[in-house]
Length: 224
Image (cartoon, rainbow, N blue to C red; front, side, top):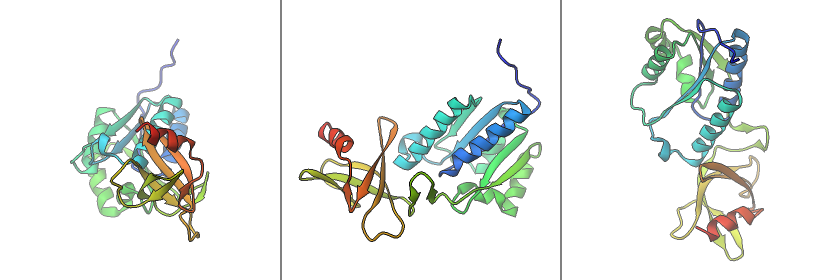
């Protein structure tokens, strides 16, 4: 027999970009579990889904996996969206009968505007029937799994004799495109290169400008 959740409460977590999204989703799940109510996730982007860069696609994939793992009611992706954020949030909240919204306050988050008085006032007028939770989150520059990196930059991996190296201008021959995260405090190009392949995020370590473990990169570029 399926468990029936209460329907007088429902929670919406707004995520946009960065490592904080997972934390917000887990916070929403904890609250939804306590209230025994449905949980929804919303991300909004002016670009169409197929135009997301490797980094954003990676976050979408991780959030989708997390939504399935936590048995979230629905992960709503509003891509190619030209309307103001508050209008989108309002429409989604009304459509799904949302009573509580969780957003993150971050220095590098598009949702940070929500924490500013003028925007919050607009949002409260648009969605007067909802309670807001503004969650303080860490700067997305910190990835606890790998250490600390600079902001990601677009990069390309190309073949260089028997090795594979990273370059920052688009090559004229075969390459893998992705995002390079350079370790803070190093003079060399040391860090992590993340790229999307077959709608899955992959990553390889970069040491002094070259791919450390070439097996994956070699197989992809050989069969490109």
